[in-house]
Amino acid sequence: MAVPTDELSARTAEEESAQLAEDLLAGRPYEQRGALRGLFGELWQDKAGFLGMAFLLLVLVCAVFAPLVAPHSPSAQSISERLQPPAWSDGGSWSHVLGTDNLGRDVLSRVIHGSRISLIVGVSVVALAGAFGVLMGLISGYKGGRTDRWIMGFVDTQVAFPGLLLALIILAVVGPSMGAVIIVLAINGWMVYARITRGVVLSVKETPYVEAAEIVGCRPRRVVLKHILPNLMSALSTLAVLEFARIILAEAALSFLGLGIQPPQTSWGLDVANGRDYIFGSWWLVTFPGIAIALTVLAVNLVASWLRVVADPQEREKRFAAGATAGAQHG
Amino acid sequence: MGRFVVRRIAQGLLVVLGVTVTVFVVTRMVGDPVKFVLPLEATHEEREARRHELGFDRPIVNQFGSYIGDLAKGDFGDSLWQRGRSTMDIVGDALPKTFQLVAAGLLLALLLALPLGILAATRPGRALDRLLVTTSLLGLSVPQFWLGLILIIVFGVELGWLPTAGTGTWKHLVLPSVTLALPAAGRMAMMVRSSMIDELNKQYVKTAKAKGMPSVRVVGMHALRNGSIPVLTLFGWEVIRALAGYTVIVETVFNWPGLGQTAIQAIQRQDLFLLQTIVLVVAVMVVVVNILIDIAYRAVDPRIQVA
Image 1 (cartoon, rainbow over the protein chains, first blue to last red):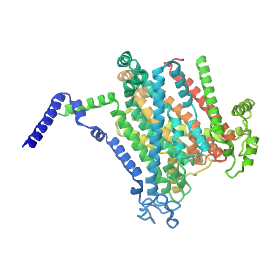
Image 2 (spheres, rainbow over the protein chains, first blue to last red; image 1 turned 90 degrees about the vertical axis):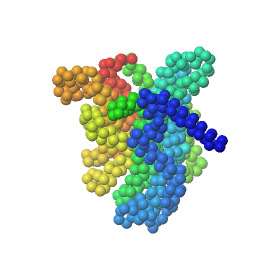
Image 3 (cartoon, rainbow over the protein chains, first blue to last red; image 1 turned 60 degrees about the vertical axis):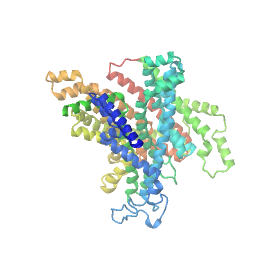
Image 4 (cartoon, chains in turn blue, brown; image 1 turned 120 degrees about the vertical axis):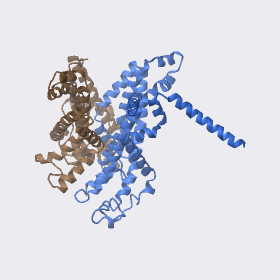
């Protein structure tokens, strides 16, 4: 008998707390909505953002499980099956849905495997450039004075550099490879994080709670990490996602120019470059890897514009307040 | 104004110096310049002889000193790829082609972006506005080299209307400049739109409307003048971006013999000295355009204080 009683009381407690939460939230419609709706719900509300996120998850699954998802090996050549058109065209076959390239390799399998490079390069560059840029921005904004002038002077100078040309030269000199692409793109892209971080630090530094933390004796490290850094999350998360999209395009462009990813690795940009020589007869070689790039970058951009609203407390306030008034009018 | 220009020129010289030093350090110290210049199968003796001949065996500070000295005399060095030609001569041949492309492309972008952005801003949320926002986002997501190739497939290969590569007639310019224009037009149209929406919601616009001024005049005379300032900034940024080497992609796709393609050829032909000159010229152009934009910016908007 003891067990069911426990279960019963547990359920009552749960119901009680739910009742309590409901009472607390009564008359505050937008908080109630925010509390009831999880992050998923918010995402579902923004249909474009939801589609973007769903597509990105699909790309992620393809990248992680590429050997299982892809119908063929991306490097398996078959001269007898070279330059086959996609399945729905004349002369195409369903064993190579998106056709084959000049060496008889399956285009679909290469597109699936190519997603790995895009994601790895994108995530690594954002992590490297973001970490270094945020660190520089924190130091610059928090220390101020001469340190600030030096770091920001350096940022201003480097921003005026012809970045793409320098990237091409560095890649040509050190020899193109995935690691080199990641480092070159990170060197080219850290400045924007430093600028944004510094701006937020400057606006937060004079607030009473930061001063209070300093007065009670927090070390600078603690002030920066515990009190200042959390304010950056909204701006930085959106920036990181937008930069991720930019980096995917940059990697594709470098690989297209022959100074990025090298065979036998597969990259979307590399495959487009390869298909260029067959553009007069075999349109599918250029088209499908390009569509993969465009859709992925579009998905990232859609997620970014959703995140911009959701991650910013002020934007959230506007949005849910607007939703609440609309709901009240309907009700 | 005078002090401001002087300070900007000093800043610009710093940028040019920084770029030159970066290229020097990257090519002389990070990589082996002889390895870059000679084919892989060259013997050790050949390498050392070449190293001595080109002066790469001297300390890097000496090399940099004599490079700057030569520049001061107007000697930009001879090309390794086109023997006996000055590198500046090659750059001088390529530069007008790039200017032509950038001018046509960005003019087209402006002609597309201004009317579309303004129309969308006058009726935000309507069909045209939503269409513009969607296409712009799409345009930002499409890789430029791919856009060019798709245009080649459609208009060059399938329809056969336009030539797919090279220069010559005005027809050769159409596809490259459209490829250059579309992404820029997307970015600028979004900027025109948001900037005009901001302006059209301001009090002075409401006043002008309330006193019965025709809306063409309100939008065209009052709002556009104020709304064009952020657009001008973005347009300047597009010019700088194009001159800073981003035409390399369009030029490669369309085999357009401009500066970008020359840079790629210099890399492929391992012509270190030509590369140095290209980067130097690009850096100077970027700095000059930057200063010109800052001056124009202050001329259009008297609210900006000359610091």
